[in-house]
Image (cartoon, rainbow, N blue to C red; front, side, top):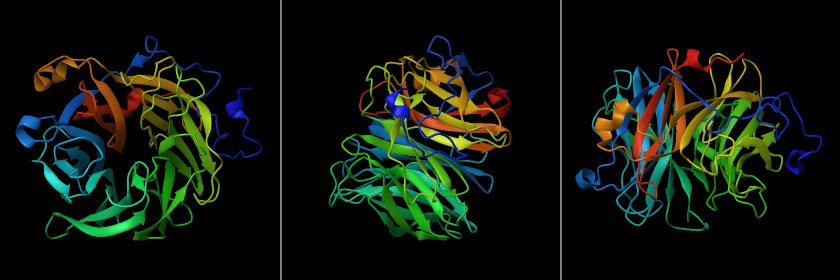
Length: 381
């Protein structure tokens, strides 16, 4: 047995910790993976530094609230994760075909930065949780904390509600657990995997729980939850085989308070943030760069799904490869091959709306892009 699969007695109805992909179904290579049909592509925000000054864009999120699609991302006139970084967004009222002007969710903070995060609707209000960093302890993000913003009911503008968690960067929208708490996966100030747990329905108080990764760099968590059991899927910067990178996995059986030690899974994943969710068809899905033998490339954005009601992923499709789709070539004005990364998704009306970064320049100088996938295309039997 592969040593990464020797996880001891910790099993559950959710999954054996390190088994994310059905071992009886080989993961397709880049040449084998089938392209999804019927996908509509849109550009949410084009990289336009000559117009808005922002060279860097990353971490797009999407959420639907009161018939409006909300998106957000981090933007910077300089390099990522530096002072002056801000949170911007756009809205769409016509199924993501046209977009509002860019709005400011998290304005600049002088010698600190604000960056990408997530949305959730709760008790009749739309919330946004975003990272803030720049002053304090931390090897990667000094003074990292999570701030809350609420959409004003009368102003329709974003209002900062202050710091709600220390040492945490949110990377997936909150999940409600059986115990009444909310749960967010992400990373900490040292760029290691961490999660945040709310105090019940109080979205202004969260506890940060860090995973035991030792000297390894295992970070940027996403998750599935079932009751109080949670499975984390994480970016793995310390792979057993650097030529064949795989996601790391960990499991909690007590609502995220304690965790198994992360281990390498059998799901290929380039060193980039994954996104996990569950469709209305009861299929789990994971979006990332997950072709077998992908040589740690972000050239193939994929979605893996399970069969309805099952835990293990067993089918993989290509959402988009590095070639610019014909429908977007006029928008981009070029056909340069693009890296595709940092996905996020929301389901609505029989479709999965997937947002991600797309760019041909180094250092995440990206545009924000959207793929709309019909759920029927993701059927797995």
